[in-house]
Image (cartoon, rainbow, N blue to C red; front, top):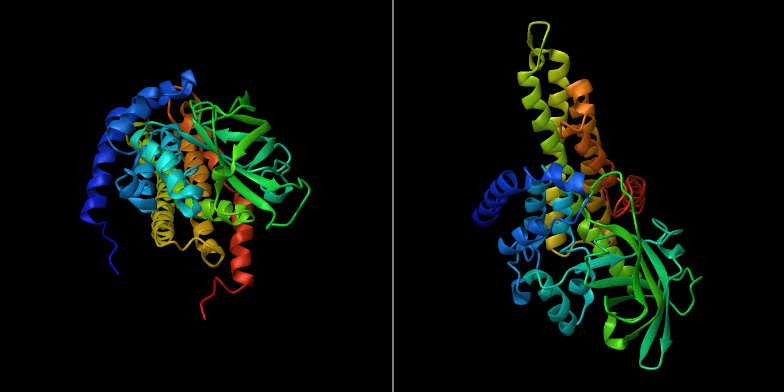
Length: 389
């Protein structure tokens, strides 16, 4: 068993680490304060070839896979989870197409994400149906040689910037609970009837718009269908499963950034005649988080390795969910500890700790809440997919 990164991945890690420290770190507070999309960061990632990191070489990417993207996101998230989310959005909307799309769809959408020509977004959640995927009511009705889609999506990251959307729908009957009566489609932004609705006022991860997508009798051809009719639920779930390590990497990076910030402060801040880093109680807090960061990384890198092998179906879902659950909850814990180390100073916008604290909370909700991940893990255990005998 070899825990060393390959030469290529080690070089990627070093390159992105340097880029993040030199270019992302100084911008992070500004991005949060301005709450405006950081075009310069997108262009930085494009010029560095990072937008195609997760994309296979045959579609213009570098073929770094889920593991490569996770490593890059971990480095970027040390300073900005908004910037990390820009990278994440190179895989979330393209995932269903990579899993089940046609060659034409991959050339039109996946390849253009790799080059930076287009940006995609993932249309799943609805106002009354977040974790309850089959509670959604967006419906695609068969019409001649195509479909007419009507419904409303919400909480979509990158909705304002996206040039196209992957959209999960029910077929014909919006009230059906049958997983076999679902479908996924790729819908260009300029399709008549499609519009961006309200954008959200967010607590954290500011600078990348989240909001609504309105589909009012949006007509799409049969060629917009991803996979086959009846496969929408499976494709969507496999797409989300394969994303677990990428979201986990955002959590690990944030935890690392928050802990390093707190350590630097503790070594400089004096109380009772010595640096507070000398106090055993504080040392134990830091040691606990450091250990959990290493544990989370092991879970996450294994999950990324599994996703790159195609092991993201039901029988492997528990392992992938472990990484997402553990790493994102760790981000919340680490940001809490870092803020506590700084005390009153950490509560002020003069320090990064309050930004880490706000950003961390999002991670335990997006792409499957902590409770959803625990449910998946428990099902894996009860159904025998997760077993040690």
